[in-house]
Image 1: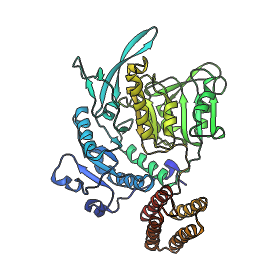
Image 2: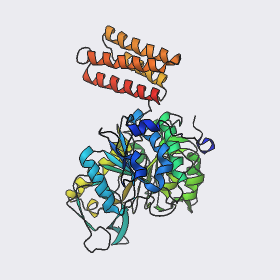
Image 3: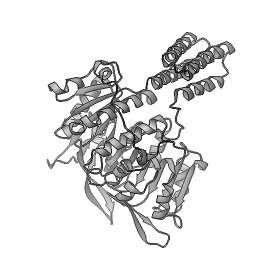
Image 4: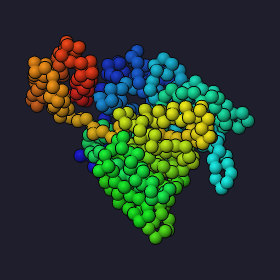
Length: 483
């Protein structure tokens, strides 16, 4: 079992020759082509699903971690990833890079790693009986690759978006809360432990309801129904249960999801104590005092995702000692961002896709003239961490033997023709035997024979759905064996 910061992992760069020669699913593209970067030009012509832009400053040290991440995502999510390292002048430059690659590959999303430039947007929010303007970092700009964004007064800040259209991709940022590149290495060590199953996470959620009144606590629990059963949710709620101490104590346990509703600012959140006083949960608490906590956080607070601020709170959730690998938060006031919508979209999806659908839905409402949505504060929504994290499901086994045994058990539940069931199970059992005696190549060949058998039975004694599932899972197990 993964022990966190007490047992930091060493990620070793392996199979570099295979990466350069194109035998891997890793695609590397150099932005500024110089002789020393030739190894990072595109090495195969295959399509990819996810783009990573990484700042040149961090690329060399992160390369082995990125290679491992790409293998993890291929093995566990069946997604191909391309990496572009470079230096971008401004947000126009970044958007043009993403758009050019999107037009030739139809990518689903893009991760921004390191100090990648961002756009600003100015909007208004209602406070003290009037609307006030506020300027905030806006990654939604990169999600809308073909829309028209205007800076009508030429002050370097967008102030209008012509006819909000459907966004094309999700965007996820990975920026440490302080200038310390070792935090990125630490993040990828945690992330690898998650994907390999070393980080053991029960299917549970924590709701900490500090703001809006005690009646909202049960409502938050109810809104998590798409992902969790009531007995899988722990609720800490006003008026007598919320305190900073109770929150930190609750985070000694692991959860898939933590949803905290509290007033906040860039580096902290305020929590009303039982005696009516207010305590502050700040960035150093997130860094030092979360023993395990959530893999994913919904920080339902103002400004906690403001990644341009040093020590921003979301950053120290992601890069701290706890289990956090992803967070949805806001770079400004939280008005118009709906965690309830996000939860609905996260069912049977990864958090990157859920974020995409959240923004897409808000665009639709803005076009329909929703007065609150039209003020565009949802442009401040930001996703930080690993966009492939999945909520509400139990992870598939990362051990090839356990995964093969689970596939056998799945076949047994389908009430297939006995001849079909027995022939499929026989090949899987031989694959397990091969793994038990250390003959990994033999197991890989037997799994290939299993896939071929499935294809011969497709639309005969197997439905297309059954055949698709069996071939995908068998290929995943083959990838696990290869490491």
